[in-house]
Length: 124
Figure 1: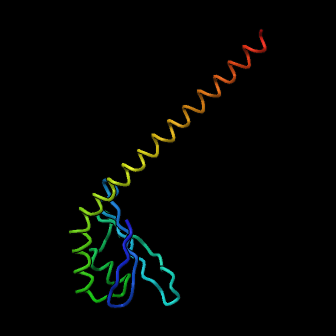
Figure 2: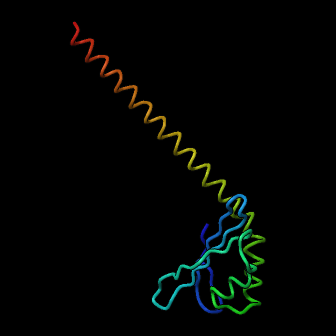
Figure 3: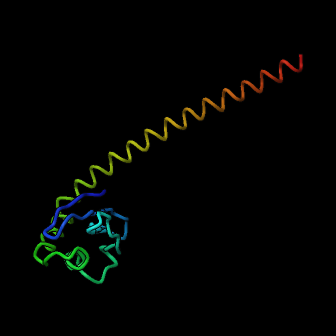
């Protein structure tokens, strides 16, 4: 899930994901003066040497207090929102998969019927 965020130093794109045993993964991409997001290294909850607030302060260039508040928000209220949105996306992906499988099955059946009809006509 990506979220556009306005900080004291400008706008940033925060990407949040949960990767099973790795826990939360956060990628903070501040927008440069040219308007492009400056991608950087991701922070992983279980494999990071620094707390999230230090990562955010260093990577976004915001004061430590602001980074601390942002980290609390990311690891707090954003989690349930991410879970809800993630479930919705998975549900939509499953629905699309079923539609594609159904259409594919119908196409295969029609092709098989066409081949059977062609063989029947050639044999007679």
